Length: 75
Image 1: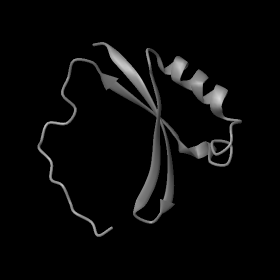
Image 2: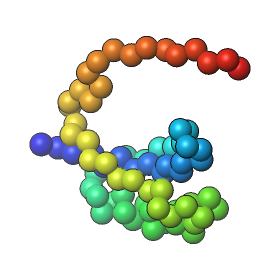
Image 3: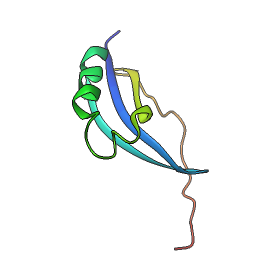
């Protein structure tokens, strides 16, 4: 099975809200870890080093298999 490694940085700003950034998609976990090393000293990332997350994703597979609903919020 071929896998891609997705790197996100997530900071939980509030109790039920988060600030998530997609950093990149890498061919190996080592490449994703190298990206963390490159970014670790940048503003924001250095204040929240625990926010990096690497997730393996099998390719050619559906990862969201159900529908969705839209929730309206008051702006």
